[in-house]
Length: 266
Ligand SMILES: Nc1ncnc2c1ncn2[C@@H]1O[C@H](COP(=O)(O)OP(=O)(O)OP(=O)(O)O)[C@@H](O)[C@H]1O
Ligand SMILES: [Mg+2]
Image 1 (cartoon, rainbow, N blue to C red):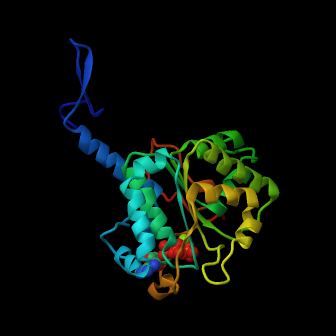
Image 2 (cartoon, rainbow, N blue to C red):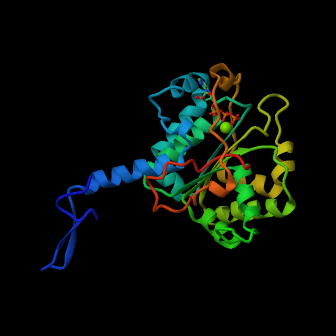
C-alpha cells in the first residue's frame, strides 16, 4: 500500500532545511523488503525455517551439539560475518544439512547482510555459462559478485562431473573470500561421518586447495547422522530451475519476484 505521507520512498523532505527524515512507514517498508528478499532467495521448501518450528526441534533432539553451535553462530551473526567465519555440514542425504544452512542464510538476510545461495551444480553451470554469447555476466563480473556478498552459501557440494577449468574458478572464488575474510556456508555428503570418515572423496571432487581453505574458514565440518528423513516424509525436492529462466540472483530490483533462485543445473 502506498504511503499517504511520503511519496513511497520511505523519506520525508523538509524543503526549507533541505533535509530528509525517515517517514513513519519506513520500518514496515524495510520489513516488507526484507521478507521479499528472503522469499526471492530461499527455496520455497526452506522458506519457513525457524528455531521454533519443525524440523528444528527434532533436529535439536537428534543433533544437540550441532544445533547449539548453529544457535551460537546465529546469535552473533554480525560478528561471525565480519570476521569471515563460516560453518559446514556433512552427512548422508536427508539429515538436515540444508535446513541448518538455510536457517543461517535466512538470519543473515534478516540482519540485512547480502547473501548468495547456490547449489554447487548450479554455481558451476553459471561459471561455465559465462562463455555463452548471450551470457548475462562475464566471468570476472560473476566472480566479483560471488566474492563480494557477505555470505556465500554453497549447497550440495557433491559428486558432480566438471572440468578442471571450472574447479579453478571455484578455487578462485573460495580463495578470494578466504583472503578477504568473507564467510562461506557449505553442505556436502562427501565427508564420511563414521569410522570410515575421511575427506578424500571431497578433495578428489573439488580439489585439495579449495578443501583446505574451507577448513580454515569453517573449522571442522559438523557431522549429521541418521536415516533419510526426506524419504520418511515423502518430501518433494524443489523443481529444478532451467538455466535460461534463472533470474539474476544479485538483482535486488525485483524483490517481489517469487521465482526460485536455486536448483540443480539442467
Ligand atoms: N532430524 C530430523 N527430524 C525431522 N525432520 C528432518 C530431520 N532432518 C531432516 N528432516 C527433514 O528432512 C528433509 C530433508 O532435510 P534437508 O534438506 O535439510 O536434508 P539434507 O541433509 O540437506 O539432504 P541432502 O544431502 O539430500 O541434500 C526436510 O524436509 C527436513 O525438514
Ligand atoms: Mg541438502
